[in-house]
Length: 581
Image 1: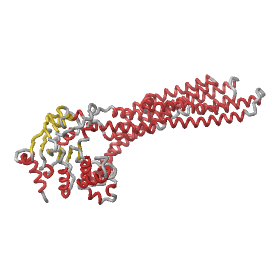
Image 2 (image 1 turned 180 degrees about the vertical axis):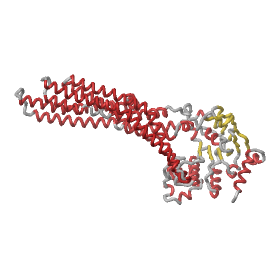
Image 3 (image 1 turned 45 degrees about the vertical axis):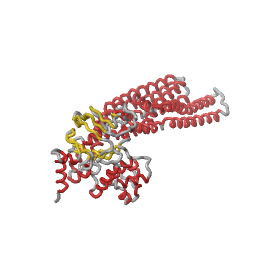
Image 4 (image 1 turned 60 degrees about the vertical axis):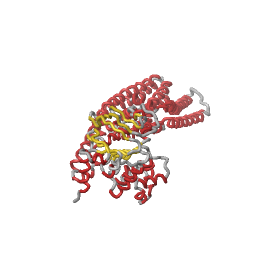
């Protein structure tokens, strides 16, 4: 348990000083909480002695003690305020910086990282799990560390009156600590089981919701819901089993504290009967016996939460230590944009995807890449953008090996339009401006006109200020595609990669999109992955990819005259496009 507390403290980084100052304030809070009780007991003792004629009280004693008690109460709340100010905002400060830092890390890892690590798990770690650390981390510091600081401070106060009672209090705290450690060990054993049950339940729930239209269409709600019911049932059973494992340690933890409280009362009572302690002091110690352990009684619940926090810290540490794909890269300004693939090989999970591929793309030309599904077309573009690193060979731009560049400096030279377009939950204007944050409204509109999306944008309720649903859900596939093209046009990068950019565009607008794409050719290097003849026939060079190899290379006229994949491909496309009912 304290190992996790130590990790939380380390996680706070430069804010550790604030935590340590908070511990001092917490100690002072306890001292000033105990002082009014001690002052009351001391005053009552003096009053009784005065009544027995043993001493004579000064007349202003009551007023003096009242002032003292009020002062200690005020100081208690003052130091409580300072402790909260020092500690409670730390979690929010660090979590915000952590999210930004990990976001920077994830920008620089290979896309293979997201294939090996479930994106839902990554998302959960950065949102809900980090939120638990953000909200509860400092509360755990307060509950555990400050709780035991409070006990130590109170024991020191009791030792001032009677060392025997102070030792009983210490023994109760130590026994409690031992049993709480037992709870912590059980948490560690059960954490992987609980986590798996939680992940399974979440995954099955998301799958059921996402597949709801299929469930309804095929009327298989009974079959589909069986899996989600099993996940819920398993989660319930595991949680009940875990709670049962905690019960013995939890009962012993609370019993040790209650037993210590009872012994404190009994021992102090015996000392009074033996004449070794005054009654007011016994009453004061009796009050302490009911409050001394109150701050650590809830530590048993903290053990559960600290185990979850420990898992979150493990995941965050793993993310922060992920290998950067551009860790040796430098910011290099490219002066030319000839692209060269030199004997490039790439495999994923021991499966060859690209096999010894070599080709050149001259600057300011258009290259089309075609081939069967799964042949490696998109992979070639992903390797060029360095979403992945080649296993062997070299890719260079302007004679510079792209592995010598940072991802930011490399991608600043590229605009990319993907087949599966993603738009942010923001205005249309801001989604287009994503290509160039410093662009003016006039430049955004000009890019939208070139991408043939200005007219439909103006027909929307708020024009360019219309909010787009998450992922672009409020727009059609063709509309999203055109906004994505407008974004690429606005970036005005020297290299443009279009991955099936016209796949979702209706025939009426395809001609205009082709004109927009053609207008980018001047002064730019264009790479197009496409299947439509209208998109590829005017390319300066066509690469035909098959099973990770360049099967054919040439212009449309050259390849059409050759027997091979390209000619067969066009024949099939012509038949498909001329087919009618």
